[in-house]
Image (cartoon, helix red, strand yellow):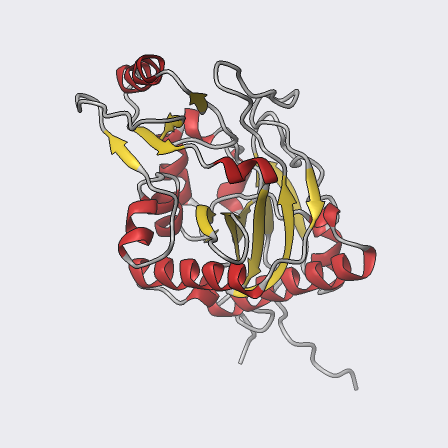
Length: 312
């Protein structure tokens, strides 16, 4: 007599890229294999491919054109069956005004001033960075030593319908940013990003896809003081969004400065590069296994686990 087999569910998982990078930039090349090792099957699609709407779970990985199609992107995120990170997280994190929320929660953050279209722009003394509040990959970001030029750039952003973000330029960024990677709310690994913005009056060099500025990345082993800032940022974000930090499949916290005075530059919850290629083989395998396990946990939380549709 043959034993009855359980009705095992195999959820359809999509890793979302964009038309210019439908399979990402290469850093996530091993993720499909890492998921397969856990019995999960995933494929890459551009986020605007109609097939994404048939998926059980969509994981944002390289949707780097969303700034040009934000309303469409956010509406799409609410239409897919399940999105990681969630649509509420994405809506909050795509607008850098989230920095004000983190600062209000006590997270040490680079000073940031926001000027909506029609607002009078105030430029502080010294060198500044001016960029759109909704932006990715350093698109629209420039450094200025001339206040008038900075104000003109901010005005141009406003005229295009953007909120302008003005920050004092922190010279410590020349030493690079420390990118702290969290998986499922727990610290995973880190890497260092070389300075992306060139000197005042120059523009960043973009990759051939035109979606992000080219970066120089190396492995890193940050002091615990930096990780403390990362944990504080995740806790503040989770509290603001009324979720648990463990519900964030991934997060990247970009920090400048050393252990004596670290400050948060950005919290990336939408589709950050996770720096897999900067890790040695053993560490990379362990971290990507952790990523796959967190996807499993998310599937269980969403009612999409292997036995969720089992017949009685």
